[in-house]
Image (cartoon, one colour):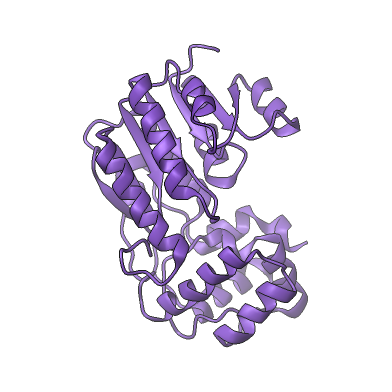
Length: 293
């Protein structure tokens, strides 16, 4: 393998990809941990990124990817298995002499969470803490990217409605691009961030009526917020979107958490860590206008 010092898992996903973009701009040597050596891995390799292939079920694959690494980003999908994956990742990092881990958690990660995924995230945080490898935990609020995910963007543009089950709850949407910049800066310079838990928010707390208004301004079409029930949304996720049961259970509980204010608040953590403010909803939609073509 190359002389890469920073390992990024989830490298072909949104936060991992954004982190790699920022690290390359910073002139850092990066290794991507990917599940398959496909065209996306080839594209990263062309950009000078080292490629390590494996998943989170084989500690030997993870240990090989950690060779020579100084800091590493851990991202697990919202799916079963994160606790074991965190244990493998932490042990491999410890064996390899890695000195910093950035762990992607979520704002609803709590011991008492009714979401299996959110509770597993909380336990995974503890696994990293027990490992002794200095770890920074990121707990983002609801992603701005929900508005442009293909399932949702297509429906929003076709109906000119945001049909989410969040009542009048509020949050400050945060873009994955901003999260990627935070991840990159923490990986590049982890000193002083060890053991910290950073909630990540966008710059302005809003409800979905206000989000719809902001989207309307950018898209030049009136978008309305049409709140739906959690039960209707659950049915849509199961029968229209065909989401897996583990993800559906999580999102049902997230909807209730959102209504209860768990995702609310704002801060300037993105700017403090990266030196650049987080994107507003208007800026984010402008950057992703093509999702609504």
